[in-house]
Length: 471
Image (cartoon, rainbow, N blue to C red; front, top):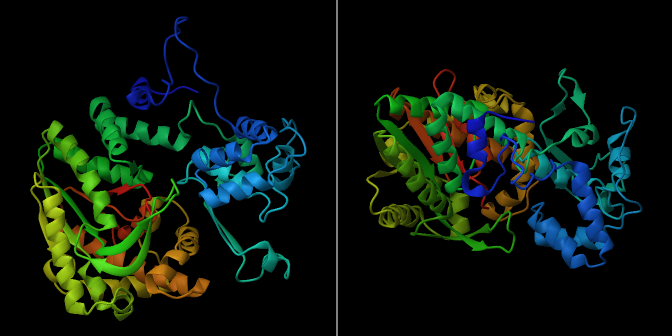
């Protein structure tokens, strides 16, 4: 598999990835073979034969990104019956049969194919394939066909072949490829940066996003981002904007994939966890703009409207006035953290919304509850309902910590729509503030939640740069 030479330059940046297209040179060390599901399973199988669960635990944690506790559980229970086998005829095999032949099943755990899904997530990237599991096998065995509400498995997106026909997970796994360590969806997006911005500016944008540890936006978001930068390259001022959460209490975790976890047992007046991500992104982005002489203006706001929710006030033990005063302190702390960056820092509802927030939020919520997700599909190109179902399952434990009580799937879903309506309202207000000028939203919270921001963006949209998941 080859790619445009300039894409190869992007991928080779920092010597982290091997160049995809190069002239033969016998003096060079040949690149490693493409990474496949089979090659990954062979490595896992070899580690299992070493009889040292610690090595397998480390592999599951560091390579696949499993939480430490889950990695240890898989390492302890993975007992392959045979070496992973090459499958010559896969047409009539189910996913479970394929994963069994590849020694990717852990029979003593539920679901038995979960290890295979972790490998697929690594190969394809979480933007292409991800899953969320609720419940355990003890409850599952009491019912048939996963009908119990406490046991459900949510998958993100479907797989299709070149003719548009659906692919099972097993067959998709066999078709997976990494070209010298970089997932295909990353290569495609790198190529888009080059085609939209030109080789030099495209390469530098990729470097800036990588330096700031940002997730690559969905294709339509990437198109909006590149369009804004192109207008900036022609001399227009680019608005850098966004909204960040108050300084809710959080703690560090031992998990490399999710290094922080909110506790929500207090709220402070410092730079909050979400704002910390923007603090990391902003200098890298501004450095890129300055390099190309793009004029910019920074307008950021804190989500002071969260003081309107009595449940949140109770959870953090503050009155509304105390909460708002701490938001003001957080703005001053953020400015102090980036003394060399000229910016306007606002209270979102008080200073920017001008009475529109609740009205826009109510409209978005009413439509979403009726199954109307506005312009989101135009921005993602995917099944919005499927993404929303996945997010509700994925954020359920997060919401339970935030509001301090256990939730059913329905409660988590309804809360997601309410929060999504807030994102939609904020996105519309930021769009109106831009007044048709090129704008880029900088986001430090969940990358996946950003899809709601495009609810009202039917024709004109704001491109988003989001931090990778940190909590």
